[in-house]
Length: 239
Image (tube, rainbow, N blue to C red; front, side):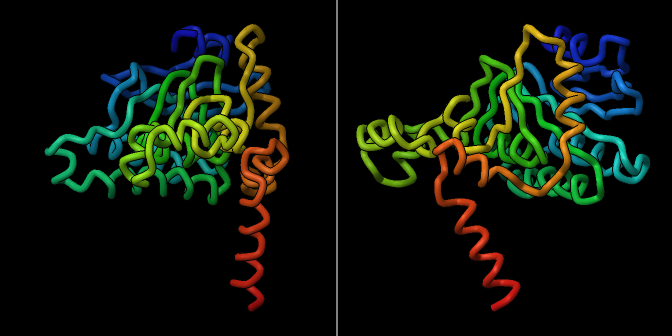
């Protein structure tokens, strides 16, 4: 689906979502009533310091001006923009600032929904998609925290070893199906059905905290993450 098709399916009554360069921003009304804010990145753009700062500032403005409205983050990006310019300005800090702004919004009572409709990778994926409270995707999306050749360089393991592990262990493999199996992606939406109804259904689900570890365990993609996290929390809070 194109961005225009996605917006039309999400908001059949119309919207005030516009694009500027590679960024998406605006507002719409939910089918059941009430506003929703929309931000995002399009056209497989690389996420650099300027755009990360703009997106983070928009999230903070929403938190200050609208105490309850959800925030929808539409994502089709490449990785972060690893230019000399961005690195000298402290790219990692800008990405962290954006991620923290989204996490802060969720903590302040805003539902943050990420909708991955294209690609995303590395730090850009972490600072946008994975920083939302709930991440969904459309078929054909192609996320990757790290591709296997890059993982081989970092871990010093042969690429052939990682390729073999990726066949049975989703955490070693990029791609939509693998990230859904780990619980990182809550659900894959059906583009043949109106997205408005699927968004409304998702927003009606109760918020019970970060369920990604439990989803990963139930789906067999991360069998130990939730258990270990609960043990760490217990030790930290009760000694």
